[in-house]
Length: 511
Image (cartoon, rainbow, N blue to C red):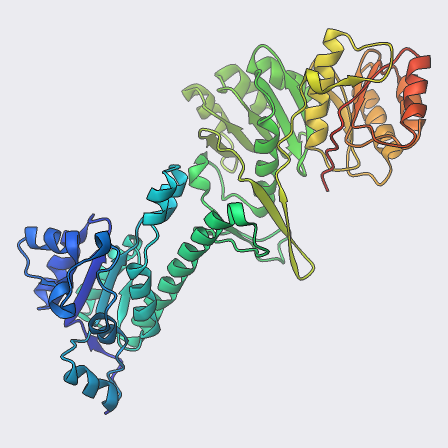
């Protein structure tokens, strides 16, 4: 028998957890004379709509058992889904066992992801692992030549449009497209379950699945294609401006990660994932002015982030320079109107901060590197003095402030700060001495007097040369991880020159 690519939807199997919009679906199918088979609560819901439906139990000869764990797992169901209608032997067996074929399968899986996100009990989470539903999806998708599978409520609009446009029939291209989505749903679901179990088992496997896809104008450079997989709308509302680019996203990620460290009113300005200006003050406008003073040249074209609402006065001050992106938890209406005067300026309203996941990863060579996020932030109790001269209370605050910035700066990095203002940093250098010289030169170029300032280093000093250079520049307190065999040489210089030095025992490399 020659198989046709056009299939009328004569029989449909529906088994869904969420009943939203189900009325629209079954009403549409009913108009085309489709026979509906369903299970449990779904069956009751359909009948309540006043639409006839047949119970799956009538096909299987078994009721729903084991508290609903087993409903559809039966040859009379899966035979009707997996039968190849173009084969004589398959059709003969369907007739022998009185199995109807299903032309459409609609499944909405148990909400496992939501149960994990809402931190339900382990038993509740386990019961949200769908067995019958995922099996129906895979079976129907495998047999796409005969069956259309709808594996998510997000496809309801597409299904309704297809049925209405084609008057209750589907073609092979339709079924294959829906099958591809079904296997994406299945893969995503299984990955979530695996990662839930692997939190404790630590099996040597890397599996990730991210829903949501945003095409970007290009990648890092115009000749590179770029895409973002994730859900930006869960983190931000874009209030204005052009499409967010690949490089914008890198800077936005760096900005959000950095700002997590600060509780006082703070503004940071970033370029190429590094802070070129940052300050904490009593008001957000004062913080902006101090942050901009750190490097008004690099601020051009940068990304600005504030951890307090932006008022009109601050917006007017910001508007005086060109920048790509501004991020804040709120904007006064007049402030928003000021910032919107530049049509391409990206204005992001940051929603409630969401913590990083437990791990981060990046592609390298022919594989993936995975590590824990660096969530360690040093407090005053983490500072161990290694000189008899202790830092003053003000210096301690500045050391902690500078150490937060150096943690988020590209290695090798040095940060110079005073009165909770970033004076200058040296970042991404192959030599720590070069990083320090870069920072000192930059601070001088923008008129900062380093006498009484502090220095933070993202790693230990292998030789005393850095503290010697810092001491000559006027630095009075130093924080670094320690751990070098030559720690005593650096500490000895500081001891001799009345520079307070503390160590943290924590290195913050960022490559």
